[in-house]
Image (cartoon, rainbow, N blue to C red; front, top):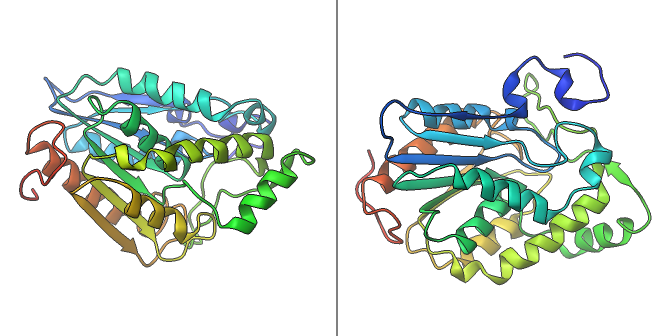
Length: 271
């Protein structure tokens, strides 16, 4: 990995800029896969590629302000990230569209489900971020007014051989914007009726348990599968449980696509 000020220039993998995959013929299933705050599409590339190998069309956008510098990120907002995710969603015209996201990507996925229930038919969330504990929320609100950054939140991995390409500082104004966006997500959780796969790590040093608990208790979905993974930390799609997360998502996508598009209840037997 090359040392440079621009994050995306530290890798030769072109997927860092976002990527699309199309299955042969007319794919019934499409998947939008969203990375987390300060990260890049490489943190979810394996997840997306596994869905594509299973026959899905895939969109993996690079969210605004990511892949460059923390200063760039600090000039972007929740609204801009949501707009980029919405644009990527519009490029999938499949009968069944699964939106998957990790951390902030999970929060954005929930917002898309709330705003576009006709286009989002199922959700696969990995350690979704929609809430912090009260003390950390207060710290973000306070420090966001006086400090430009604080230490990195990306890179919470149990696997000593793993790494993620993400910023080494957390831009605080952008984080404040994200936390404000979460308030909208929490307010409208009851509008989420889609089948939901909720995957979380038993040990997560970034997003507290209250976040997944808030999602589980707030949604109206009748079809909810919650899986707790024991080996990895927050970066669950890049850590020791990554293969299990990928496989669970493929099984979920196959199951929901076996039933009517947009169904909010159980959609058939697992593949």
